Length: 488
Image 1: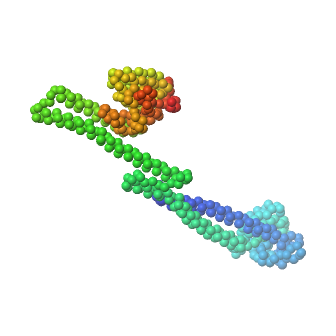
Image 2 (image 1 turned 180 degrees about the vertical axis):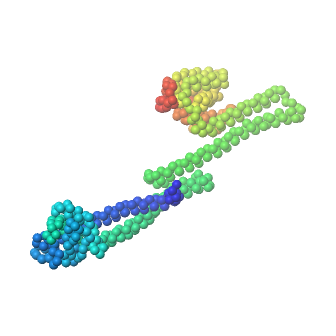
Image 3 (image 1 turned 30 degrees about the horizontal axis):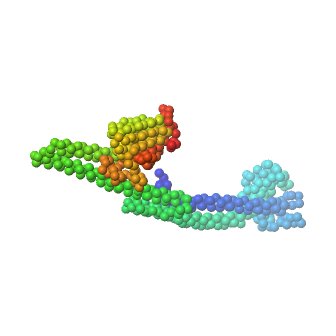
């Protein structure tokens, strides 16, 4: 990389902005200054050219011949001013005739000889040249015809000094240079001031980020004008939203860890107690009665099952969205519900479970979706009275599971999908309080909605709505995107 570019990129943003502003102003000022200088030069040269045209008739005799030996004859139409210009006749062979009233001799060039060769009195040639002393002059050469003395084609050359013109242009160039320098410096200072003012919110944002990185304090917020819609305001709002989300996520994580520790403590304590009883009976040589020993082992097995279920639920809740997205595919909700129904009938053989299922296809993770449906059915089985009925219906992408149990009190309905929340009346029943939380997360990740409400006539009805279509999509690489995205 170019060292200059590397050095530029290492500068702070405000310094780079100031340099860019100064460079832009310098380019603009330079363009204007150069344009102005050339325009003024053109105007001054036009004026000098007009003066040269007026000089053509001065110092020339009545017959149009330059008088080289004596001063010109003055008449009413020609008031020749000596020392006001150069006048000379140049012949085809390059010799010149310079009258006494000319300020000096102008050096002849090929351009002057070309005028003689062209022999066109209607055109003239303007050029810059020098006199015999090397002083700059502006020259006009015009064809005059045949010289009476030498009988050679000749041209008349008139010239005027350019010292005043060049002095004016030099002064103008100096003024433009000074003004440009002041303008560039002023623009650089203004650019730096504007950059500092514009980047002040960014500095605050940087300080906030550094504070969060240093202290892990996610409660910090950047003040933002509610009416501001610029990029910095949007960035500040995004940062505040990000820190709020991170703070909420950390609080949920800490709450999950605390709740998980509390829920794990109970089965672990019970397991330890039961195992200690078994160990003590073996060590002391006083075995437990067979019935007590079987009950104790059954309790250990149930607690291990509950512990494994709790760990599985925790793993399900801890999975990231990216891990889930890799397994999403088109799933037949009808088949998923039928599989869940078979498991539910095994867990509640004394219950009557009726089902009315219509085809429906949705995009979801098959295992997670089946687990969610199983959790809903398990919840219905758990709270259904012995010999009760559970009604399952799938129609148009809407799955309803209705039981005839005691129902859920109105004040507890807002909490049913919270992690580890369990109704006081259900705390004696097996479960971790994570089942419905997993249901809500799975359905939401699949683009659907789940609700739990009172059923007419008593009991509870769970309603799941999932987007999709009643027919499977064609088997193409675009299958995941061909389903109807509407939500019933």
